[in-house]
Amino acid sequence: MEKKTELLSRLINIGVFKVGEFTLKSGVISPIYIDLRQIIHYPDLVHCIAEAVHEKKIERNIKVEVLCGVPYTALPIASVVSVLHNIPMVLRRKEAKSYGTKKMVEGVLKEGDNCLIIEDIVSSGSSVIETAETLRKEGLIVTDCIVVLNRMQGGLENLKKEGICLHSLFDIHDIFDSYCTVNKVKATVIENVKLYLEKNIYIPVKKLQSKFLTFAERAEKMNQPVAKKLFEIIRKKKSNLCVAVDTVHAEELLKLVDDLGPYVCMIKTHIDILEDFHSSVTEKLSKLAEKHNFLLFEDRKFADIGNTVVHQYESGLYKVKQWADIVTVHGLPGSGIINALKTAAKDYKDRACVLIAEMSTKGALTNNAYKESIIEMAENHPDFVIGFVSQHKFPEKDAFIYMCPGVNIKHSGDTLGQQYKSPEEAVKDGADVIIVGRGICSSDNVIKTANEYKTR
Image (cartoon, rainbow, N blue to C red; front, side):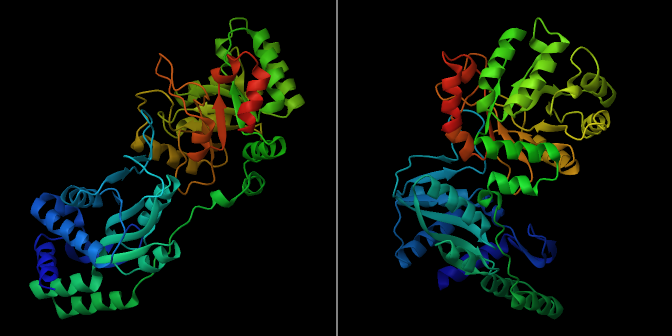
């Protein structure tokens, strides 16, 4: 008890507990705020917390072969426990790297090992649940979590439903009582906080729904006609394969498209690389799309000012608007580029675009801030933006279609910076559509190879 009181006092003294009016991540207005990130400035305090966590592990007789701290504040605590008591540790990423091994969990993973999760603060328990899901996918067993502070807002109950027992060093009442002991607090403030704590606001865990929906169900939920049609094609043909047919000769392009048509939901083109382009090529592509029931996906990557993009889309040599169901767009120019394309396509009900959120090349500059802006653009234009070209699905963004480029069964990359992932990895990362190029088009038997990708 003495150690607990001393540790609480130290936390109060460095200012981790604040009284006022704060908006929490959940949107709830709270009269109190706890910020444990400050502990990293006090190594000896991190040491004390780590020892308290280890003592709790022993007290509760928790079986542990490996530790995992929830990103990010709990990472130094878990690291110190690992070092002091020689317990191996793994690192869970919030999102996979777009280079290297692209793992969500780093470290030596042994299937069947018991993994103890360490967290700084638990409210609803959603971060712990997300971490547990990731670890369990890697074959680890997760049954326990030790948290420094339980805010007592449903985390204990939510985690129990997921088969996780929550063990806390302190709860919200402990830290508030300690705060009132150390500081002179007005009676009105005490009453306000106590009333808040008595309400014990329950925060439910938001679950992603897309994992439970079939392509047919998602098609029904889609209002955008191109998105709806794509999901219907995927369901009917039992194929989420898009082949990137990048050849410089029109005759070869049309032959490949005709051969591959029965196995794909989309054909992706770079029409401007054809050395012998003529208007009949796109006319023939449209007829093949109708014959084999697939969509035409022109990887134009529009990235200019609105007026220029309108001309690029509807005019010039290729007249993309007339034949491409879907086009790719970079978000760099801002929402104006979407408005321009929508204006140009106003006479067509069956036109759409996807935004480039992530690329499969090494060193791509599509960072998190860029992705957040891209998501906002998409959400502001759901009548024209149907999804993203990305390496991963974005949490709680189920209204969009995710298309993963750079899929290849046999190779991990090339000499020009391309990085590949397997179909299984792409789908695991949330891809609705896998985009395969050279893996099929450069194979000895394109039909056999396409069918192999389709059925994997």
